[in-house]
Image (cartoon, rainbow, N blue to C red; front, side, top):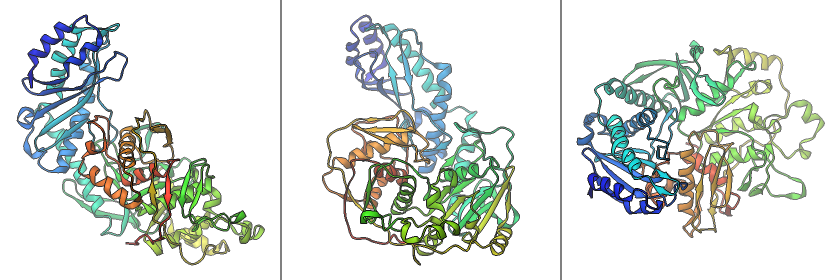
Length: 566
């Protein structure tokens, strides 16, 4: 390692030279309270920024040991420090006149393990991009000195060295996450799939904002569905417990149905203090399902929903490069179950109508032998009975679902009412007279064996949560609604590339298990060619969803096995 004084001298000597001479700075430099590693130096002022790593020991940071002893505390502390860095950057932003800048991966409203800031038992690491300043294509050495020897130490001191005012904020950050984990852990023993605490703020500021809506109506559970769960910091918490089985969320337009479903969908994550949804939790294996016109489907057994196609096309290993709404939704359901989903969320606004319902009038007009689609209404009960998979549906247009629902929740101006008894009475008074279609059981779930033949090194590009490029292939992410950060998409892409470089094929569930072992121990560097600072923790379900959307996917037919219904 080299003293920062040497770095200062080097920058003075480099002033005015060709920009590529910056590459001589690659190395490790010691400062009074941290080490700086310049791991990669950009060769051009217009190239992606240089990669840098800041490392502090816990002795240097002086953060009390009770905040980083346990793995969950390390994850929460890293999230807290990451947000501190992001909030401080505007006030300690490097001088922009000569192009000097730094970049730290953004955060979201949830607490995730990220590579930007990591906490271990040894210390704290910050990974950031640094745009080294220039005049044209010449090194601005004195500006680089300000950037690396003044601004960066100021940022590190303010963001990573313990401040007395952090104590209540950091303790709240940890308490909120530990309470959410405790709530989620109690769902199964209470036979619940989700929980929404009284007082939660579910609405967001807009359709493109994840910030809580100011002056929103606080959530209040109906007494008939209210449950009380215990937390280590907040004590007894009362709220709506959604039981396992089939639950409908009904109500008029703009009364909060989709907002409630969206909050449940994001209940798979732990939220930050002040988000409003800190005490909204869902089964960790909850997957939101929608129709996706145009997506590719490879080797999926969609026969529980689609069979007897014209021209005798098989649906037991169905492939298409351009799926319809109903076919894509059927594939999404079967793929989610194959990956281990325990609860499905469906909103009629983003669902294919012909997969959701076929009423008595249509059954009379079009005989079943001429209709290859078996609607979800005839499969949702079987899905729970045969495999123990629950479903929560937003439904405003079909009362036929009253007959198969266990519970019906109505929203009126964001106020929640249990209308199960009323809905069942209406169903009894006005029966649908539908003929049940699709047999007595849901059907078997195929575990597919996968292989991607192209194993050439490839680059990853992701600028938003709408698209992802892996090598030369663009993957549409719009249908994967539980991806919240572009860093998750990039991490998934690198995980896929790691798998791509292996010649053998994989049973999908085994592949997911292998990759998630790396993710769960936060070993992101095992998934990438070099240490990266813009990756975020992801779930097996979003990993599977991206894999399933690869148009170059190669399926090797394997024997059909039923997904365990535990």
